[in-house]
Amino acid sequence: MELDEAAFERLAQATLLRWGDHLEDDGPEGLECEQAPGTLTLTPAGAGTFLLSKHAPLRQLWYSSPLSGASHYAWDGTSRAWLSTRGGDDLATLLADELHQATGQRVLLPAIEAA
Image (cartoon, rainbow, N blue to C red):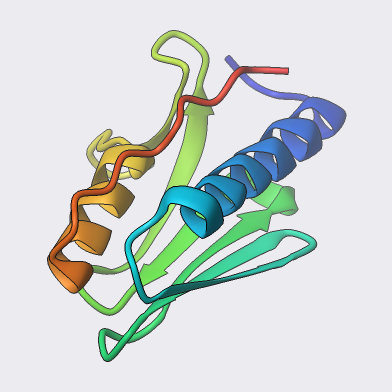
């Protein structure tokens, strides 16, 4: 499903806010969360910085990780998830797994409701 610009903006911002709020309230101990318009920065103690940002021109979320590098994700309406533009991996699963690796604590991210 191709998102129009307004739908992308709502969905991307909802994703960043929902995950940021969840990780701030119920995330691993010692995880610092910084939310700014269009970005979510996650810094586990001593494990580098994870960055999620929206990229409006391509209607994607971009992810930068000290563990896996950089990758891009587009919304898939069928699976209701942000999927990698190279290989189809789910962003929520990858982020949760990598935060688990970085902190040693299990991480679950809430589902995102399409706008």
